[in-house]
Image (cartoon, rainbow over all chains, first blue to last red):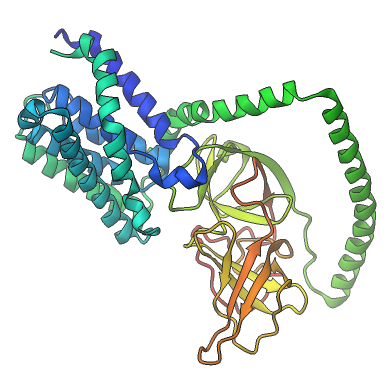
Length: 160
Length: 290
């Protein structure tokens, strides 16, 4: 692991995730958009907890806030908490089989989503119904292939 | 950052406090516009990149469409243009007459509105809020509270201006209220978004109000955010419940919310100073701004 040179896969993954997070979807599917950036942050925090911790997650969150036009700090807090939970349970997560890992990731995404609710509720933007939970379900579906593809594509260079 | 610093929990705690502080400053005090401006220039390429595929697709569709269809469209547009020009001639006469009459009445003349075409970037901000991004910002003179129209009527207003793009709220957003009046008789009310781009509600009309299905609602100009006289919605349902103080009135926006690629930004100089940054508009202003 030699520092700087392996930074670009993370940057690339984050750029793709940021683009997917605001890419246009048909109206019926909009609520089902997986939390791409959160999944990416969780993935890298799980892979290299020493390098991509809560600080980086928080900075990514600020960028996401500006991109999505939410109040500054909302996604920052959500992502920092997600990264924190991942790192805290990372030693255990890493040895889990993939289905257990998926469930753990979904739990983290659920916490992430609920923090978003609370902030929306406090600022008076809370709209929508149970459909708001749809993104957790789509995270459940998206995580295994995402994990597999990322491991094949990115981790050989960046993993330990 | 924070490579060998405090423990993980402490770091999260500090960042949490910092986030809450940021949110407070941003939401309550609006102190962070400068930070947001700087960062928005950095994320603008992402927005453009996201918009690129759909723009490319429409370009491909345009360049591959058959010559015959283009000719047809051209002919149709030319016919429409003739028709509109004819109507415009009458409109100009009417406008002159209106100015004369207003001068007789000693009221301020309506100033012709200046408009600018803006493209909607196909960027989804939040599925539960009706917001969108347009490609004109403060460098084009856009301002917060500016009204946004399309061919059918009022679509929304700008809520945040960045150097090269702006965020706008649609009239169908649940936190948006549009001051309207019934075109037929001047009855004033407020149209509130429902979160469904096909409907707005008029919750403050009493049961005996003179409103019928099919009535056109135009912007009243109260509150100063929207220029008066543009169509907003058409009443699609009136339900009078004897037990309730207010009638249930539902209207369909005349503008193509969420379906249009282009919108018009309007500079209406009369009401510019009192344009409020937030979407809340007072239910009844004491005097007409016109």
